[in-house]
Image (cartoon, rainbow, N blue to C red; front, side):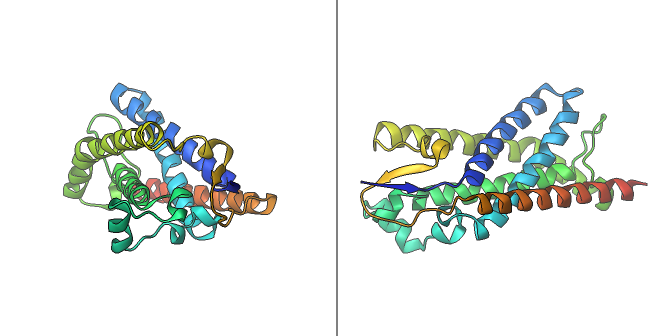
Length: 224
């Protein structure tokens, strides 16, 4: 057996931070009231994390890069038929890759529509002044109903998949996302996870936070 660093520290911190933020978003949205102030703030944090992950998908550790789990349709079909390759047991397998891309897309749309939403009571997204009233209504409707349902379904599927792999396939997916390492039978590349790469991740996160802050600030300025 070989010990391989699969998930670098930035990827692991992103994963758990995003999980906490999504739960916080669902709770604050349902509680409402003044908790909507936190709903907005956590929404900005989610957008920052998603932007970070998009960048990290190109410059992060080997198994965190999109190129390591962008599978062709025939590879996906072969995996479903039980013809898995050794590397499919290391990072994201073809089905897992689909769930990752779906989750990133759904969350981006959800937080994006939130920026243009208006509850017509006390809280509005920072970019409502940029679009027409019809667009605001459409974004609000999606954000509060369809988008929220999509997020709940994907989270549920994610948890079910973890349980399935642990109970049926005897494969632990949570532990490597905690300590970063995985035991594999064949030698495969390890993800870079050094002080230098961690500082790079911190710089990328900071730039993404600045970008989100500027975006929100531009929306507030337009309102005046």
